Length: 113
Length: 114
Image (cartoon, rainbow over the protein chains, first blue to last red):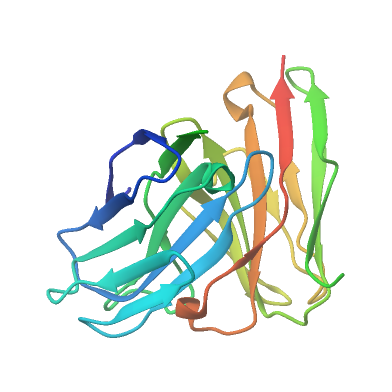
C-alpha cells in the first residue's frame, strides 16, 4: 500500500501567493521526485532530488530532500493561474526495487486569478 | 514527437466486455508500467515490465493482464470489465533501471465501465 503521506490534499490560493507542500514517510528514500499533472494530461517531472539535504530549483519551484531522507518539500513562489494542477511526490525506497517509484496521493492546487 | 502514446483516449465499456489499452514508446526504454488513477487514491501500480518478455505484478493487478513482446509496446488487457475498473489509466516508461531518473507518462486513457 501507500507509504507516502502527501499534504495538503488540496489548496486554494490567490494568484501571487507562495505555496508549500510536503511528503513524509516512515521509510527512508534514496530519491525524491516531484511531478505536476495538468488537467486531462499525464504527470510531468518537475524536479528530481538525489542526496539528503539537497535543495534544487526549477524556475519558481524549489524542492528539498529532507536530512532524514524520510521527507521532501516543494515550494512554488508567486503563483500564477497555469500552476493549477495536481502535484505528486514520488520516491525510490531505500532497499526497494530499483525499478519502482512510490507515489503520494497528490496535492490539488487551485489558483484564483 | 517522441514519447509515450496511449490509445484510445476515451472508452466506454459494458460490464463483462474485454478490451486492450495500447501503450507504445519510441524512446527505446526498457522499463514500462501501467498505473490507474482514482480520486483520492493517487497513482497505483497495476503491472510493470523491465524488458521484452519480462512482466510482473504491481499493487493492484487483479482483473488485468499484460505482455511485452517488443521493447516498444506494452498493452494492458481487461479480461472482463467491471464498474470498479472505471478509472484513468496511465502508461509510463523509463530509459534506466534506476527509477530515480523518473518516468515519462502518456496522456492517459479514460475508461468508464457501465
